[in-house]
Length: 271
Image (cartoon, rainbow, N blue to C red; front, side, top):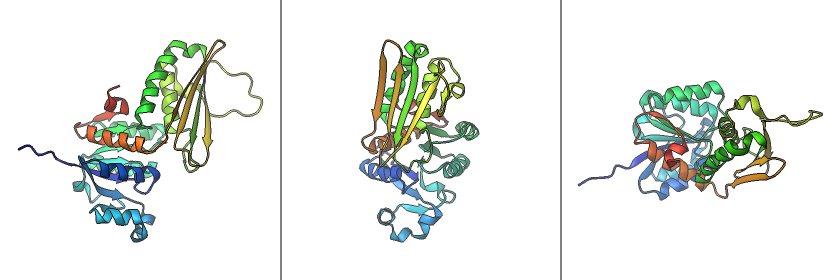
């Protein structure tokens, strides 16, 4: 008889907004189990007072502050923590040949190069947004940019909750890079992140970014292509964080079948 092996998940960023959503979605999937939950040192001190952690302990989940000594307890890490913590986790996963799904955003170019290097030995799925919808939007804007991008003023507007730390969002940057690549432009040279004072007329072939931090907005992104004859506006609104959690879990299951390599949600969804 062939027995299906259950995939063991480690989670970093356990008590964050995405961590809580991931816990709920992991328990709904019979093919996976949450075996390790990583929390900060401050959270660990008061862990016995946290109802979420108490519930995890009842389900035999290991509560730790570092992956270092529990690498034999999981198959793949899902990481929605902080830049520093994710980089620490990546080193441990690399050392122990563990796959990783990265949802943390805000890495600089050197940190991103490091992630690419790591993927030469282990399987890595990295995405700024794990929803199916936003990845379909990426396909749409690629086609629009190739067709009318050079004749349009392009703006990206993103809205998130007031606790989000990085700006523009990782998703907004991904959208901008997709457009720049479609137009054969260097993203870093055409991205405009701020406008103030007497700056003159809008420069041709630039991509403007507007950032809103307000209340408890999960994540809204709008891309505008505007010329003298018509305006095209493509908007994606996240109504529920579960869409990101489900995408991250799908990625974790998918990457377990890969020995090594760097992948995105496009690869997971076969877009």
